[in-house]
Image (cartoon, rainbow, N blue to C red; front, side, top):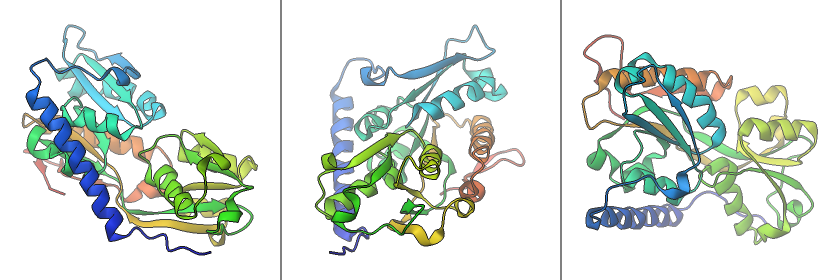
Length: 294
């Protein structure tokens, strides 16, 4: 049986309502609490480093979905000269759980966070804590990719396949959409041979080596050197890319521009053509620096 797997208006409405309810819950919880705000116990997983301002006790807190990104980002932030003038410590927390991410943003605990714009809007993060976009990833299409045949959106097709997904639940292409597909096909997730990995790069490596039969990810032109474009099947299109958001309770434009340069270097260093069209939201060529809007 074939299924139309395009996200429906009903699915979009349910997602927005769910995020709005969570936003109201966390905001109400925050307003009614008299206790000082503390970092969630569940987010004790973090990478910490010191800047050159050893006497500065101010901490710059970052939230990202995976440990690999936390490990890569922390030393770069600590070495940033603008950030070092304002902070003595950098904490980069990682968690792929949406509820934990919402808790982190709704309480204003993250000075810098990687998130989706629908999450930030549902939490009213821009008006509550003055979060502003710094850099954003482009829209994309999600796919199942195989290296020997075009994946079929049929229940029986997946039952004997080794499938690769990402291990953080907020990834649309690598986790959410493939699981939605399995649900639409009436497949019990526990009946599938699924291997969870930490990055899209690892998914591609395991598919290329034969460890996996199918992976759930996005497609970019670099992939054509290793896989056939005829052997991909879409699971969702026009998916909005994530954005980096900086909490700007002050008009800290120098830090915004410094982070825009730093984050651009991080994404360009990935070597993927997907990041060639990264959007920058700040005018940083001459002072005064300005937010260009989204």
